[in-house]
Image (tube, rainbow, N blue to C red; front, top):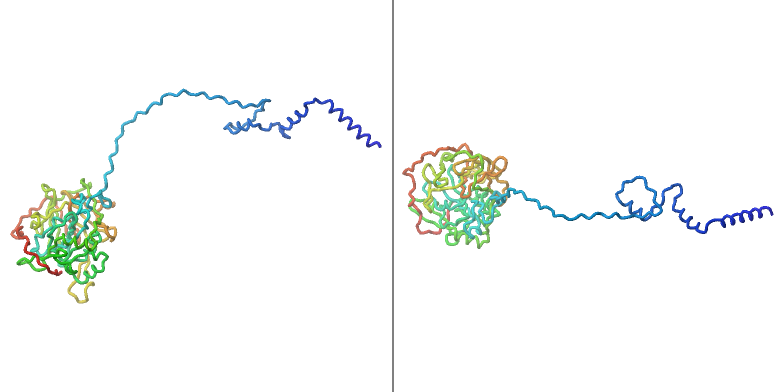
Amino acid sequence: MRKPLNILAIFLLTISILALLPSDSQADLSALQITLPGTNTPRPTEAMDFVLNTNTPAGPTATPSDTATFTMTPTATSTPTATPTATSTPTNTPSPTPTPNGPFFYPEGTNPLTGLPYPSEAALMRRTLIVKISNFPPVVRPQSGVNAADVVYEYEVEGGVTRFAALYRNNAPTHIGPVRSARLIDLELVPMYQAMLAYSGTSEPIQNMILSADWVFRSFSPLKGDNCEEAGFCRFPEEGVAFEHTLFLDTTPLYERATRRGVNTGFRARGFAFSDEPSPGGQPAVDVFIDYFGQTNARWQWNAEADRWVRFTEDVPHFDAADGEQLWADNIIVIEVPHNRRPDLFPPGSNFESLEIALWDQGRALLFREGQFWQGFWRRRSRDEGDALQVIFGNNTPILMKPGRTWVNVVRGLGNVTIQDERVPVEATATTIALTATRTPVPTSAFAEP
């Protein structure tokens, strides 16, 4: 009975103590629960959470007062003032970058063969045409229509004499010739300039190569049935002139035939670079003599009054029968190209062979303009269509040509070229062909022989 009495005594004592506490002690107990066990830091209030989200550096936390109220401190409003306008300092306005005039980009409407605007819409729209023109024997001089070409390639054929491949775009003459046969080099020139080819005939191996070429429908020849009435290949017989030297071309019916074939499209080749200002570093040159394998030669002299180079062949002024002027050009280019014999194209024991002028890759070159010359290189980047001849320095920058007509002399070696800074006196001799010796008899249709 003793244990229950003790429990009863403890219970009565507790009741007595509680009776002595203030009546609001329950609120105080709930306030004590803010303090976490083992620390004197109060639990953050909502106002303290806002402060902690500022960039206030970490440090000792101040003990909050009984009324922890966050007061926003008003920020003084600054009176707006006029913002001074900056005075612009005058600067040099850069000049607009001139449009490149080659070797890959040309101003709109510019002929990349000359660096000059096309003279007409017809010139812009038609395709470049290469015509093969004889230069030997001397009886074929003066030829017709050479000065109307934009570019002329002169190269060696069998026997150490030369022939012309004349490129026409700006002009479409009605009388070009005498027209002669194709050679291996033409298989390079046609794709270089995305051109058409007009020729009299050729050897069977080369003809087979033309017939198997991708551009076969851009080739025209009496050997393929292109005649006088339908294609402009007409004969002009003349006493004392061999039959093979009497074929001339009227480009008007040829272009019409090309249009009917669907190949008269005005594609442009790219390679030459032009500027009114020459490249720096030019050396004086007014007389350029080229010895073609001892059989024939070419001489170019700078005519400052006419502002052009004029042509002599075997020290005789070389004229054009169509316009009566001496052959001329604004630029003379001489390129050194390997010449390879190709007897393998013909049956064993044959007396014939062809000369392969390897007009691909690159080699040494000279460029002449306005009484000066520059040494450099020629380059053909690929054998693709439209990838034409470039003339460059060793650092791959173009040697700038004068806008105008260009004559390209292809040689075996630059050792055959003599350059002088004084004009060599060249006197006309009795062998000069009279300009009245133009070929104007009534044309006759005929097939050409090589």
